[in-house]
Length: 213
Image (cartoon, rainbow, N blue to C red; front, side, top):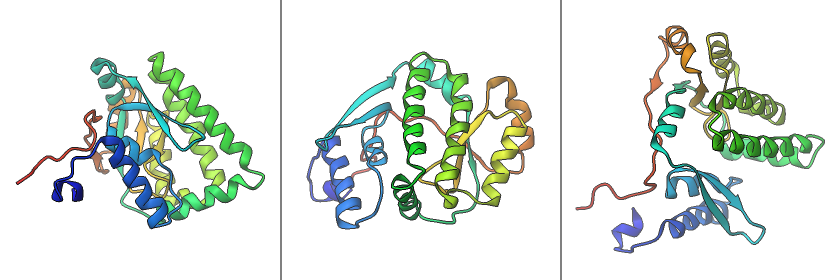
């Protein structure tokens, strides 16, 4: 928005780099770089971070039918709570990396590679159980990632057809993304009738100016 205000046309890469620099260097927050890149570029991608600080973006799903199939099995549930900021939770991850839990960090990396294979092979039903395993590990890494209400919502989902899920953001977040196989959707929706479920679509364009006077 600021670039547009000053009539500066910037590439998606420049915008992502500016966002990363602002958070990590100016605000000095302990945050990753994947969210800024994903937001700027759009699409369903693998982001490969190189040792020289650069990154590469590889599309994982380009077929709209496949994307709709995955969308149809994901539900975004409003939890109504936020107990900690992403920066605080990310700090606990960094601390864990230097302690005995560091092997769990590498296990999450391995699970990300497995998720990439699942997505490329279009075996979307395997994503739910994998998300559930990652959720268990993240709760070990940081006590701040969840709370009693988030646990209640997550476990309610598992009892009514969901096979896994994740919090959006570092943790303690307002929204929970839950994977529900198509055959279990009716039972899941019935059990979540008192919760706010957000209708969402995957976005392919990335950051754009939608109104310019």
